[in-house]
Structure formats: C-alpha cells, structure tokens
Image (cartoon, rainbow, N blue to C red; front, top):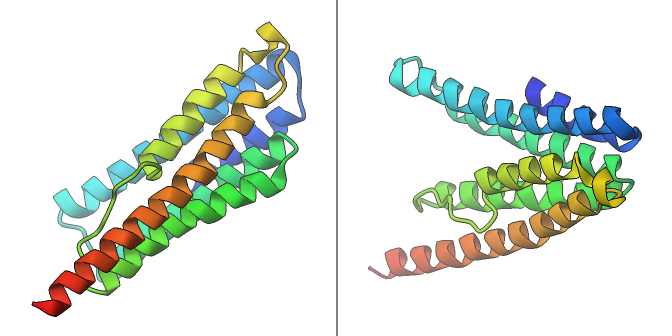
Length: 177
C-alpha cells in the first residue's frame, strides 16, 4: 500500500508540475506501480511457498490491493484534473474484485479474467505514465493519462460484467446438477 500511495501522490503532484519535474514524477509513478505489484507478488510467495499463511491471510491478500487500486487511480484522476474519472476507474476496479470474491463466496472458482484485471490495469497505467512523461514533445497535456483512465473505466466495467455472467452460468450449471 505504501508503493501505491507513493504512485498516487506522484501522479497527483506530477499533474500540478511541469517540465522535467512532471516527467520525473510520472516515471516515479510508473516505477511505484510496478513496485506495488512486486511487493504483492513477494508477499504471496512468502505466505504460500514459505508456509507462513495464516487464518486472516485471505483478508490481507485482498484488502491492501483494493486500497492500492483506489490510491493509484484516484491520484491519477486528481493529477490530470479529472478526479471524478479517477474515482470512477477506482470504483470499477473495486467492482471487478467484488464480483470475483462474490463468486468465490458462492462456491465458484476465482475468476481472474479480463479484459481489465489488476495486472492489465497496472500495465496500462505504467505504460501511460511513461508515455505521458514525454508528452511535452508534442505539447500534450495529460491526454494519454485521461485515455488510460477511460480505458480502465470501460474495460473494468466489461470485466465485472464478464465475471458476473460467467459466475451466473457456473451457479446455474452447478445448482442444476
């Protein structure tokens, strides 16, 4: 969550900066997004491979990821002067995880399908931040980051619907048998 907070802050402050400072902050935001994923991966590996899993492990596997999604996407939206778009992207990101966990609670297998699962969102945000760090070359002003947020909103909405559809199909086929 610390890496996500740093990414969100870098996006936010980067949006209020210009020139080299803006570019460096966007590159830092991209790096923090990737460090967030690395921390998540290492944490899971230690818990599973190291046999250190605890009863509250599932909570700690999910909750920080959802907080991280909000910090990064809301920070990005604030950084480009479109906080509502950032919050919408965060809400749809949360919805993808909610539908997956709802399915699991109903006995369905975990559905990590996309098109805008966590790894896809972070790859898009990272690429957009890196591209946007050189946006000054064509007098751009946050259009790449705005486009990335719109892609996340639409893609995460479709992901939630796809997972819901697959979950309903699974529930119907398993209740009927």
